[in-house]
Image 1: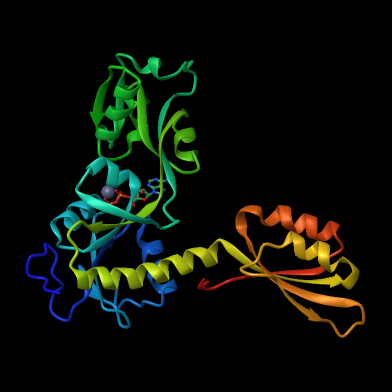
Image 2 (image 1 turned 60 degrees about the vertical axis):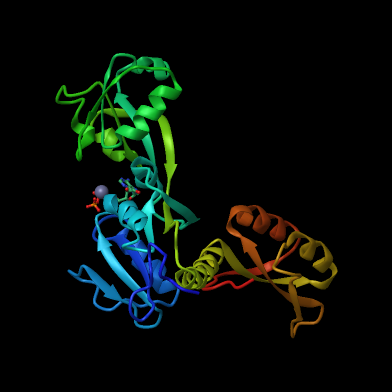
Amino acid sequence: MSNKLSNSPLGAGGKLKLAIQKSGRLSEDSIKLLKDCGIDLRNVKDRLKTEADNFPLEVFFLRDDDIPQYVEDGVADIGFVGENVLYEKNKKVASVEKLGFGKCRLSVAVKRNEEYNGPAFLQGKRIATSYPVLVQQFLDKNQVQAEIHEISGSVEIAPGIGLADAVCDLVSSGSTLFMNGLKEVEVILQSQAVLIKNKNLSADAQLLLNKLLFRIQSVKKAKNNKYVLLNAPNEKLKEIISLLPGMKSPTVLPLATEGWSSVHSVINESDFWNIIEKLKEAGAQGILVVPIEKMIV
Ligand code: ATP
Ligand code: ZN
């Protein structure tokens, strides 16, 4: 198929162009995800762009705030960016896949000694934030009028220096808020890194993206699952097998010790401890839990 009419024709050599954060909280995990997908980048230090050795991929290193625009314009075909930035910038790009890292929340916080009684507290107040669009949406939804002060960094110090009555900022542990005498009172967005794509990808770029997505999904599945090996007395096998979900049915092998078997299966992280406890109660012994590197289903 021709690329001529596309906004994002594949350049010479037909490479998929990916934009990731140059330096910041998403950089290391973005490069790590590519590595887990078997994609090694050449010389990532102090570069504007680089290429992968073993996948037709060109990588641009940018400020995270600029990534949605570059992807909308087709300078990059795809990008890894936080949902917080994606929704704040509101560019015409498609969100394709959650990446499972860069998890944080965008929250409203007020001074710890304030009595917060819901969004109405913010009526007529000054809110400092780097996310004016998302904060305005939150205020509108709650029919509250407030003054938004857009600042680009160190938002959490604004109440302490009398610049604002409240802040809306990214939080992960909450320790920065705590150290500045603030308390978190509303979560307005739960965020993580996502893969975004240009809306007019060429067929060739889409094919490469499908290949990359298949790898990303295999890596994510593997991270969410554990390989479990255990020993079971044969008379308890039926009960133990019924507790195991597995990809199909578990593998059962006889042990050298008469009357015992070894059972192998895959368990999802979300119900992991629950199942392990039940397995122990049912008589399983010598339970080994092993990380999975890739999981192709
Ligand atoms: P840049 O120079 O690229 O503009 P930045 O200072 O805007 O960098 P970082 O602080 O590196 O950005 O954060 C990048 C992204 O990491 C955030 O937009 C968000 O999606 C994610 N993130 C995860 N946890 C946090 C956190 N606790 N605080 C801030 N961002 C976080
Ligand atoms: Zn930024």
